[in-house]
Length: 201
Ligand code: GRF
Image (tube, rainbow, N blue to C red):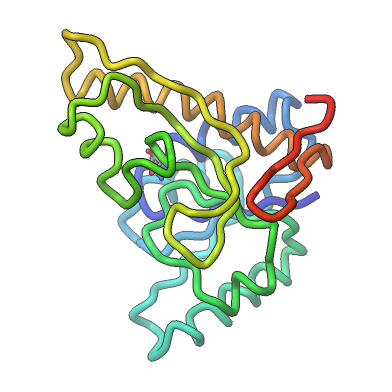
């Protein structure tokens, strides 16, 4: 099985996935890092790990369809089976979604369906919830909406700041995402409507 990670930024989740593949926790090839942002630190991480990089900038294409058609070319060329979104700051359009239905996953730094969107972590903190967490889910046509694969709760303590909460959330992400990818690659996830069944985890 061949995996592509899509990322636009820092890439700490990407590195956690690289590590899990190298250690044999995920038995699949991490074949491609695809980014839309030439400044993204994740590109350097991929190069250092010896993973092929595709940089595809939205501004080089007049329409989103053309942009995604180019992405699909790269995915097909590399025989990608699973797309892992790890801080990819673009919405996946209908063409790509249809082609990879049930084969695109995302990680979100809150307990969905609460605190959707790019500021979910901060909004949960500012709202004053006592419990937040991390969600890995399949991607569908709505933002942060697809069927939930795994969730893990994180308690917000009295002395937590946004920074300490971020650190706790990232630590959980780096465990939960490789675990969800392992389950997918081992064929243990069964997507039925909104529900994801997990067999012999
Ligand atoms: C993570 O918090 C993830 O939940 C969100 O984007 C962030 C990416 O962080 N979707 P990194 O680039 O993997 O460090």
